[in-house]
Image (cartoon, rainbow, N blue to C red; front, side, top):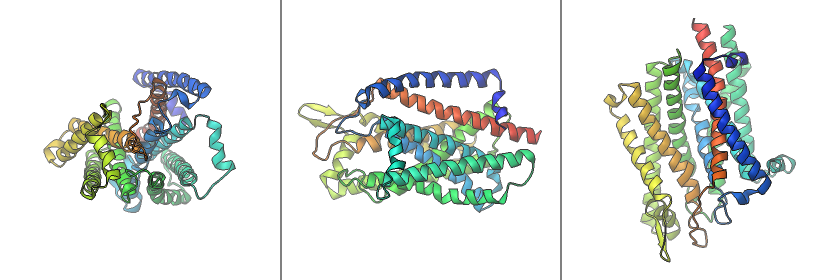
Amino acid sequence: MIEKALSGNRLYWTWLAILLAIMGVGGLCYVQQFNYGLGITGMSRDVSWGLYISQFTFLVGVAAGGVMLVLPYYLHNYKVFGRITILGEFMAVAAVSMCLMFILADLGQPMRALNVLLHPTPNSILFWDMIVLNVYLFLNIVGGWVILNAEKKEVPPPKWVKALIYISIPWAISIHTVTAFLYCGLPGRHYWLTAILAPRFLASAFAAGPALLVICALILRRYTAFDAGKEAINKLVTIITYAAILNFFFVGLELFVGYYSNIPGHMHTLDYLFFGHEDGGVLYDNLVGPMRFSMFIGMAATIALLFPKMRDSYCKIGWLCGAIFLSLWIDKGLGLVLGGFVPSPLDYYVEYYPTAIELGITAAVWATGAFILTVLYKVAISVKLTKEA
């Protein structure tokens, strides 16, 4: 089936060429980081996790969000999602691939990744995170490809692949739960030391993943003959809306507990993220603007989706889903991870600014993910359209 990715119109090849160009620039940036070391990044002793880990955390959620299609379709036989379930599985493949690339980028020297296998430490959450991510990648690649191949041949999929699909459902929950435990296991970081971090991760995942899927489905509808269907899009939007409401409810709980308890450790990061902090005549507020913008567009888009009139056109749905996706990317892909380091356990304020090298590598990883997603979607859509012709 992969040969179907080797044919396409000018727009398809132009898009791939742009992605390859970004990947090339990012590759040059990575060579510089490989030769110089992580000292070329904006990370420091006080902020040891930067843009790489924050993007990894967000994309684990995007990968887990695919379960919101797989679960209704396979467990509840919800046929409406039949045309786009494969899109959710392939989106998970691209997202997990990006997660693994961001981890390699954060290690500095990629050979260090072998230490996880050569010197396994089951008492480390990172060891289990490696296992759940790689298994989830395997489940989605094999499951999605075998089912698509059976669809191409117009035969029922083998029974054993359904077992993989059923396993992937709780596995999707586990990848984001284990990722949340990476943060909860650091007692010196008060912002992450909360029992609802894992539920908060899952709520944002179940909004961000489907939101990206809706955007992809609308792009496919615009530029190809593939139509996910009005009912499927509406159901996805409903899932996104309630998941986003739950996410903002959890954020509200964090704010209430932080300020009602009046515990400095719980308030300082919230103060820094939403109001800034002045110390010695220096104002530390590099995340205040993005975080306020994130809350505003996220809540406004979520409220708008509650009104049927705002769902009466694909254009409105696309913009509102895009706003929710951007809001959650800022909240979790920037504020949650980077804010957890400020202030430090010794109450020092050291802000993090990514360097041009980091931005280049980050853009390249996103471009690689988009490349993988484009190729997989090209194959999937070609098979479905050929079958329907």
